[in-house]
Image (cartoon, rainbow over all chains, first blue to last red; front, side, top):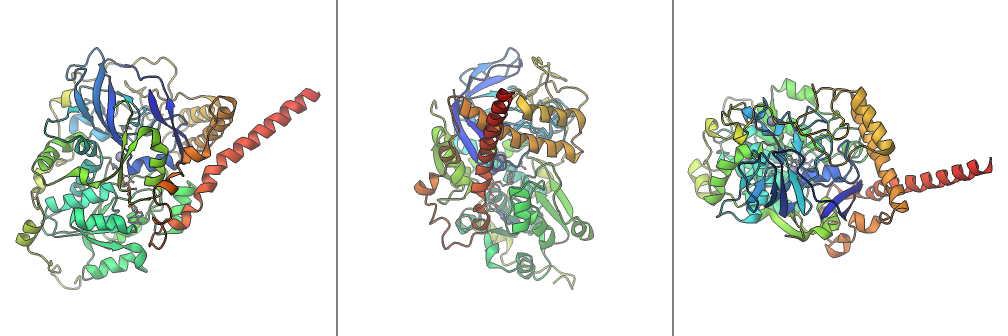
Length: 382
Length: 191
Ligand SMILES: NC(=O)c1ccc[n+]([C@@H]2O[C@H](COP(=O)([O-])OP(=O)(O)OC[C@H]3O[C@@H](n4cnc5c(N)ncnc54)[C@H](O)[C@@H]3O)[C@@H](O)[C@H]2O)c1
Ligand SMILES: [Zn+2]
Ligand SMILES: [Zn+2]
C-alpha cells in the first residue's frame, strides 16, 4: 500500500509499505477513504515530539471502510463505513471506564503520561496512522462508529479530532452564561473552540492570532471579535483594555508548543528543542484573564518542561484545565449539533490533497501558505 | 472595572446573541455537557466485552516505560528499534522513567541519530532522500509562497529562515559520517 512516511524533521515522502495485519483479536484493518493533517502533526513534522521514528506514518484524523476484522470483533463487519476517533483506547481500564478515553492505560507501552494516538510517534504508542491507504485500528469494538447516513464524509473527518477538541476546549473553560471568552489560535481547534463557546452561552468571544486570513475566518465562521497580536506592542495590555481592565473570564489555549510572538521562546523550543514547547500563548492566557478565571489548554506540549509563568497562575487563583480530547465522549451531542445545523465542521476545510502530494501538503500547512486552514488527504485507493 | 463590585456590561443582550448566533446557549447548562462530570463511570465499558483485554503476542522484545507494571496488553509495532538510534532508545526506556529529563533528552538525541542513519542508509539503498521533494518546497511555487508572506503582519516569517538549516543538518551530518566511514575503512586497509 501507499503510505506517508517521516524521513526526519521537515521531510516526508510516500512509500510502498506492507498492508497492516491483525495483531490482536479485537483489531480491524480499515481502508482509509479520507484523512486530514492536524496542527498536532506539525509538532511531529518539525521533530519536536521525542521518539518520532524515521519510517513512521502519521495521521490520526481519518474515516474509511472496514477491510478485515479480528476474531473477537462483534460490532463491526467488513464493508462498514466508519469514523475513527484519534484516540486508541480499550474501553475497560480505570480511565476508559470513566470516560477518559484519551488517557487509556492499556494501549501505550512507551508512556504512562499520555494515551495512544494513531500515527503520533512511539511516545504515543508506536502505531502507524491514517495518512495511508490502510491502517490498523485496535479495539475495533470500542473506538470506531458507523458514519450516520445523513452525515457528509468531510464533516465526519472533522469529527475525528478538530471539532471535538475545540468543543471539549470550550467545555474545560467552564463557561457560564455571559462570560467573556478569549481564544488564542485561529487554527481548526481555535475556530471550533470559539464557535462552541457560544453554544455554552458566552457573552463575548475574542480570537487572537497573527495570521489575518485565519482571523477573517474567525469573524465569519465563529462570529468572533479578532486581534492580530503583531499589531500590538503588548497584546496582554490590549486584552485588559478590552475588558475594562478586569481581564477575561475564560481563556482557551488553542496554539500549543510552537507558539509565536516571542522569538526567544519560539526558537529555544520549536527550533532547538530545549523546551517541551513554547509557552507564549499559555503565558498570554495566564496574564490576560481575570483573577479566579479558568484557562483551558488544548494546545499540545512535549513531555519536557516549558517556561510557564506558574507564579502568576498561583497568585491569580486560576483554574487550569486540560487534556487530550476524549473524542468519542463528545460524539452523541456533536452529532446532534451537526444535524441541527448549529455546527458545519467542513466549513473550515481549505485544501484537498492527494496522498501522493502529501509533502507539499505538509509544507503549505506548516508554512501557512495559500490561506490554508485545514488540508484533507485523499488516498489513491479511495 | 475590577476596582468596583460589578462586571463590565456586555455589548449585546442574551436575546440579541441568540438571534445573531445559531445555536447560542444550546449547551447552557454546565451540568449537561458531555465531559461533565470529568470522571463518569460507564457501565457498558463503551463496547468492551472484557475487563482486561486479551494480550497481543510480543513477537520481539518491546520497550516500555518503567512506570508501567508490565507491557500493555495492546501496543504499536510500527517501527521496532534498530541501529544506533535503537540502542539509545533502549537505554532511555530501560534506565530512566518518564519523570527524568534524561529519558526525553536521550529520545530526542536518538531521533536526530535516526535521521542521519536514514539518510546514510537511503544513499546505500535504491531510494536516496530527496531534499526537494521531501520538504515539499515546490508548494512555495504552486501555492503562493511569496504573496502568502509579503506585506503581511506575520510573526513566523522571522524564524522560517532557520528552517533550511534544520533540514540540511542531518544531510550534512550524513555526508560527514560517510566521509569519516570511508577514511576509517581506508585507514584500516592500510594496516
Ligand atoms: N488536546 C487535544 O486533544 C488536541 C487535539 C488536536 C490538536 N491539539 C493541539 O491544538 C493546537 C492547535 O491545533 P490546530 O490544528 O488548530 O493547529 P494550527 O497550527 O493550524 O493552529 C495554531 C494557530 O496558532 C497561531 N498562533 C501561533 N502563535 C500564537 C500566539 N502566540 N497567540 C495566538 N495564536 C498563535 C498560529 O498562527 C495558528 O493559526 C496544536 O498544538 C495541536 O497539537 C490538541
Ligand atoms: Zn490532532
Ligand atoms: Zn483504556
